[in-house]
Amino acid sequence: MLHQRHLISFIFYLLLLPTLIVCLLDGLYCGKQNCYDVLGVTRDSSKNEIGKAYRTLARKYHPDLHRTTDTKAEAEVQFKHIATAYEILKDDDSRSNYDYMLDHPDEYYAHYYRYYRRRVAPKVDVRVVIVVILTVISIIQYYSGWQRYDSAIKYFATVPKYRNKALKIAKDEINEKIHNRKGKQRLNKIEQKEELERIVRKVIEEKMDVKGAKPSLWDILLVQLIISPYTLTRWLLWQLNWLWRFTICRRPYGQEEKLYLIRRLMKMSQSQFNTLEDSQIEEYLQLWKQNEEEWKQNKKQK
Image (cartoon, rainbow, N blue to C red; front, side):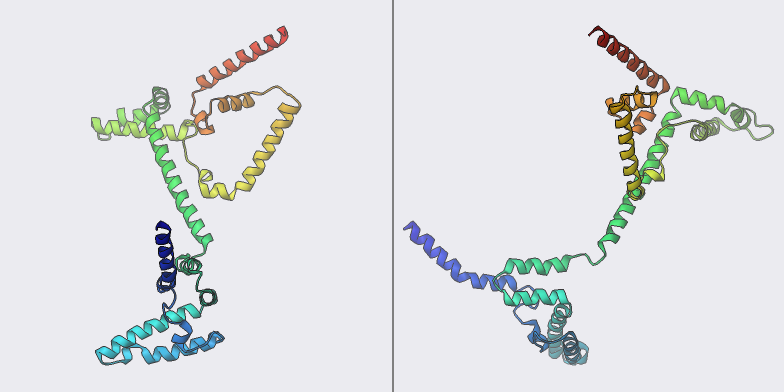
């Protein structure tokens, strides 16, 4: 009994399949109508013949040429069908896809893919889109870099080491513009504070080495992609040089190489490592020296 029900259901869906296919394809191209029949041409007609047929029918069924409401409404519907058929048949790729559907009506999933792929495909060159996206990302990256730099300067202005150094460098300017106005109107306390902060910031930016903070055009994504061949070549040469000097020839590490290995072991980027205090870097080098001496002693004992 159960098998009979499954068999009846299968036969029912099999009989219903042609109707489902027609319904699925009804929204594609010219729907139930044949695009060639709408324009009154054949599949062998040339582009010029299709264009001529379209212009003739467009003039005949243009809504503005009809007076009464009924004829105008009918003309609008017919004009829409004519325009749709011409839009499909005037393009070689679209016409080829439509001909394929006429020859293979059962491949409805393929027809949907072909039809909507052309409908939603970008009309602008993909290369232009990529360049625009990269440019926008680079602008945002550069702007964000300057925001981080501004925050870093404000932070350094509060760190005693940098602030005291800046005050020392700008001592004469502070005395001239704040403490000794020389006939000028004296500043109130709020203005003095603002002027002092402006001077400290200016000194930190111009005369002190705030490592790894200031953004550069060379760091943005678009420029990095443009110079990537040069960067890649330089990296390969550096790797080959390291392999030859320290792996094959086994030369001792210099200070630059030691700092590079320390940074790698600490898993820090170059910009992060550059922000370290000189005392911290010196401490790391001393630890390196101690470990190196211990390793040599262990090697001798063995």
